Amino acid sequence: MIGHTFGPMSRGDSDDEMFGKLYDINVIKRISPYIWRYKKYSAIGAICTLLSASLAVLIPYFIKIGIDDYINNPNIGIASQKSGLIKISLIFGLTMFAAWVTNYIGQIYLARVGQYTLRDIRIDMFSHLLKLNLNYFQKTKSGSIMSRLMGDTSQLQESFSIVVMTLADILTLVGICATLLIMNFKIGISSLSVVPLLFIAVVLWQPVAKRAFIAVRIAISQVLSSFSENLNGIKEVQNFNREDNNNKNFNIKTKDHLNSALKAQKLSSALLPPVDILTSTALIIAAFVASKLILNDAAAIGVIIASVLYIQRLFDPIRNLMMQYTQIQRSMASGSRLFEFLDIKKSINKLEINMPENIIKGEVEFKNFHFAYDNNIEVLTDINMNIQKGSTVAFIGDTGAGKTTLASLITGLYPPNKDKGKLSIDKIPIEKYSRSDLGSQIAMVLQDPFLFQGSLKDNLKFNHQSATDEEIINACKSIGIHDYIISLENGYDTSVSERGVNMSQGQRQLMGFARALIKNPKILILDEATSNIDSISEQKIQNALKVLFKNRTSIIIAHRLSTIKLSDNIFVIRGGRIAEQGNHSKLMSLKKEYYKFTESSFQN
Ligand SMILES: Nc1ncnc2c1ncn2[C@@H]1O[C@H](COP(=O)(O)OP(=O)(O)O)[C@@H](O)[C@H]1O
Ligand SMILES: [Mg+2]
Image (tube, rainbow, N blue to C red; front, top):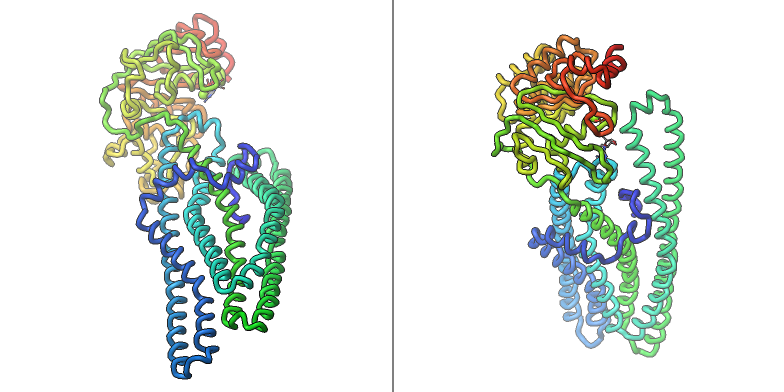
């Protein structure tokens, strides 16, 4: 019960949010279509499980028939006693077997529905994730996204089989009570009289236990987030020599978790003794009532034996129901978190990047343009900028000036704000282009290009799947990374997981350049893509850049003077505004912002 305790804890800590309601119509509505896809399996699973429960209820009753109708029946002869016993034993055996088989089939099919549903929901979540607005990722910790994708879905996976199991337990409970009462009302009613006591025990136990389980959840999420934070920040941890400190913190958190888990376990076990005591009490009451009835010849011995067997079974379904109660609540909570995630608005409606419909030539224009992210704080103010097709321009400015924002807007990653000026490519407003138009013709190379699982070749043709080997090799040669790649044992087929981490930042950067060159975009943006490559010679970078900038509009956000000098036009961005623009010699002669920049940041 304490095992799967994933879940984003940043959100509300109220009981309902932690544990969910028993019955959340929205979750049921949303999950039903998934289960409906496997309606045949679901039906088989449910029917078999319920059938198995009903058959199991019958078994003690056959013992009663065997004893009362045959063994202990003086009214029939030995021969018919024997044949009757054989018959009832056969029925008994067959019923046991059938109960076992139906239970087996039921479990298998329920598990199947669970696994298929789980897979479908994960696929939907993943494809949803890929299309979410980038703002979402800025706001949300990757740990909590992961816990939704993994933890909450697996929580939900069990929900259907738990619901069926709950039905089966209710059926068993009703069956046992009814049979007890029908066989002998006095024995039945007197032994069932302890059941209300059990319910009282449960009602008293529930809130205390719930608090303990919530404490466990909070504690484990602290442990997990501490784990993932240190994982993500391992470089900082080691650089700043924080190992011992963080270790101590982590130990405190695991200790908290251990204590709360032990406490919850104690509470969870605390319910067992009362259940056992009440079972025994019910048996004692039944024995007492039965002995009186036998003396008066008012009950048969078989009824009494069967009643005892039923009473022993009575508490299993009750105990199961209690367990399932919390599990269903938890599934509902996971379900509502999960569907809440699936309801987050997508920003990108079409992700596949095929052939563009509108061929881009590469002229970019901002006109009286203002921009604010979701938080409505204006980060770009009155931008007027004209970038000629095929030209090379540079954005320079302090951190936070708005350079990356400006560049991201051109790629279409963020839609412009409504009525806040114009951004157009080839004189057509950017809103008129599809994702596919922009995605296939504009490329952005970042400071630390991400290499995906797969071979180097896979990574090089990541943006252009149909690239031929020849194209790839030519691109790598002109960028200057070919020699390095063929020096590796497996050349272009070297897998990134083996080598990726061992590549220097400079080599990864050149990989990013080669990837961009293979894509052959009409507009290329390098966002501080040259600031970290000291391991590669200046000359090599200059050569690579010259190749890259040929035949396309190129925008470089740069720190290096040598790179900036390559550009036809330089925009100095300050506080979200264009402070100066012009080419190197013009801006130098102005002796203002740009001049100061070259003095301070580049020359040393
Ligand atoms: N996704 C975002 N949501 C809200 N504000 C953002 C986001 N990205 C950047 N900003 C803000 O926009 C401003 C410009 O950032 P950015 O374009 O990254 O600057 P630069 O690339 O010049 O360092 C900063 O104040 C930054 O805090
Ligand atoms: Mg930036």
